[in-house]
Image (cartoon, rainbow, N blue to C red; front, side):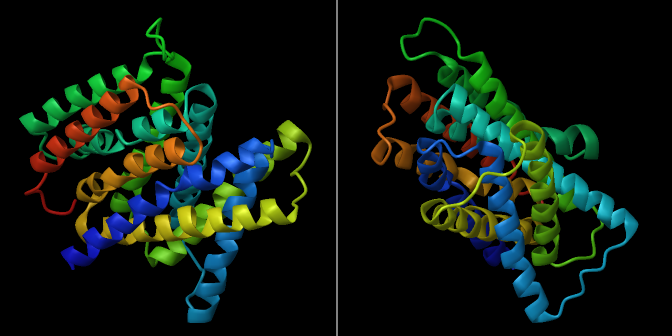
Length: 291
């Protein structure tokens, strides 16, 4: 069971790390962010709905479970919104790497709110990852700090961390597919409202955008979120989040290789320092049972 859980966590991290591959082309043609995210989540929700109907799983939830599912949808929507705002105010490589501090945030949440043991190595991990974020905060010419880009990326990490903890701790009687379906559905509703408020409605789709967003929805949303849900259920919050080590590496690689993001010394050092910090956290929590 543990091996399957770690495999699911690995699949989740790799697929989520591919976000720049789909998001940057949409930004290049100036497709609105709110419309992009609405279509991403509603298409992903419909994909999962088809599978759920095929398996004849009931979609019924209790009122309490419904409240948790609305919360999960809001958290995932917030994480996506803040991540792409981080893209706008820094770079995809930097924002994706800062997002990866969420395993440390998970460990801190588990300590402060659920009394999970916080080890010395976890504290060292926190200091190291903070140093990594500081390195990524430096502007390219080292003339100052990119506070706004970092702020949005950290907010994205916080939303993602809380999402993982809620999945782990909430008493939701649902399969991973059903839980993910409702999370996506409520995320889509959030962005529909946002698009109506900001743009007066969702933008029209053309063939290129539809193909891109459909691939975006399947790979970085359906596969990533479902795998994450199963990983959390099998191995717990902290180990599942730590296994996301490939996310920033893949995101930075795609941004540099395909979209010509500049490979600066601060970017290289920041990625290495943050990865080091998370590996330290992994060692610190290696013996912890699923929470």
